[in-house]
Image (cartoon, rainbow, N blue to C red; front, side):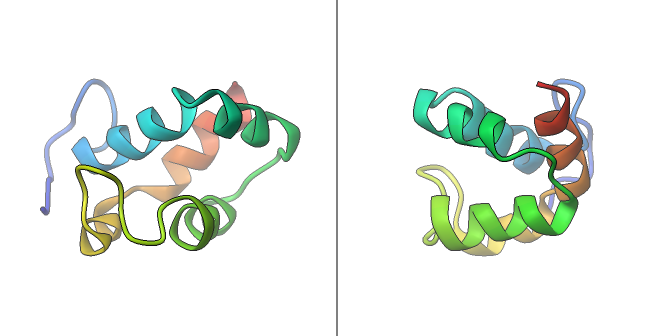
Amino acid sequence: MSNDKMYNGWTNWATWNINLWVMNEELLHRFVEANKPYDAQDAENMCREHIFPEGTPDMEMKDLDDVNWQEVADAWNEE
């Protein structure tokens, strides 16, 4: 699903989608808030290993390779 075009102000659709799934789920959002700060590796590990070990409902695991994890971490740190 390589998406090189910006999507809703994010690097690409995959990056936007990951953030949307995490931040729109109340328990995940609370978890993110309680465990700041994040770096790119923290955000990627959390998503790949704990939240989406098989991908999101609309993304396969291989699509997680397209995510800009630093952008996700920066967004989580701002919340």
